[in-house]
Length: 472
Length: 128
Image (cartoon, rainbow over all chains, first blue to last red; front, side, top):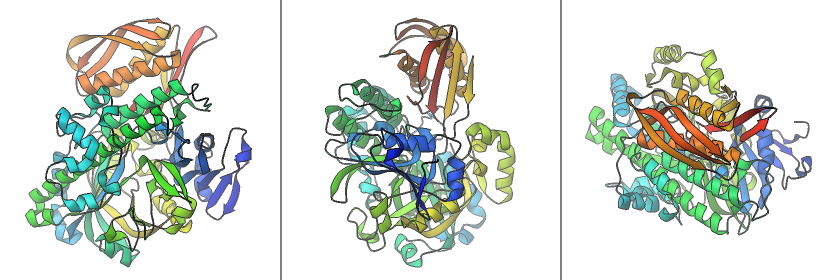
């Protein structure tokens, strides 16, 4: 911490001179309280480790939701200059394209009324949850290949507007189903449409406050409106893809004369056979994740139809779907770079051709889930993100307590009672899992969002509060 | 013995035993604590796990248990293992069931398996 230099009110840097092996500075968007929270863990050491990656350019960057992870800190961003800068599977993480999708229902919380509990219950029945939980869409080999190649487009009856309102339209170019191992295919084969465990959830929400009426209108959001936020990823398939390629690249480090301070940062030049193959497998897993969230959204619409009728289901529109864990080839500052986002969200401003035409005048929607029972935010990407963070902002509140510490401080059954006393319907099979995701385990999402807004990365559009939560 | 140590986001597991086999067996017991027990008849499953070095063997062993739990619903209870170099062979015993929320993956972050003053020490961070 002694090397930390304040650049401006919301930006701090550890200069590249702090360690012999750092190639660029480590930059942190934070306030003093956030910095104090991470002082006791390895977050900043991990960020400095990222700054040693061959080809890393600009700075190794951390968002205000930064916390200790493995290899990269969660909330970490690193761009490597192509063609020879590295790609690091650990810099994307095991849950490739873990991300969030927001659906907006054409009714208000008042109109939903007493049917709230029935809707949450029906959503929990419709979506298999839990780790390794099967019971999703079982795919043939051919259909799995199609999902890996084309994402949600490979699913039946997908609405074109859902595709249009998904980052990269739900399909990363260059996906290589053949680069996905048999073990990965076995793990993912019947997990499509399942939520997973840990911090994954589906939350029924109300738009409690509109902070930017112009952007909210463009996103189809109004005060009082009911929304559904879906948080899930590429399930066992993505976990195995990362496992396979971390091991492959670990074995090739010496051949590429790469020396790393942490084995989990295993990497290879993006232009190498290993790098190209990983990018093909990662794109396939990312496409699987978008198809997974599409299948979950379809289940949500079925639940809406059961409880609220055909017209409400038909009028349930996707606002957007964004990835939190991904590596993408982008152009920043005239350089072609591979941007690793590990627990971070792309946040392109108005005018970007990478975002849907309907949002191009206001900017890309970004969703920041708070902790369970607190607020979530809809943001919009700002020009500062392109100038300062490779077009990136934060992805959530960020953990501050370990799961064990959270369980020591709160019981799942007590938390359930507290949430229900506030009118929040809870469906979670495990009291232990509920306690691990208690609000006190996370940073204050309002403060995290304030930092990215003041730093010019993204601007607040709307504040959403929970009506019900379904957890894995 | 095994114990979980504090980690903000994930689960860090520390292991200590008299042999490399012992560390792998303790890792199985820690994994079993996370997944819970299955039901019905005891099932035996042959295993053969090889890695480039000892720390990677610890990671590969846990990955194998994760794979068996997720794809075969095999919740491990015990194993008979022989470690030669960085290869472990033997059988895993367990019962079929529905695993409790599982680890997603086994990371290489802070990974360790080595003899140290007469005991074998292992450490592994699990992505949960």
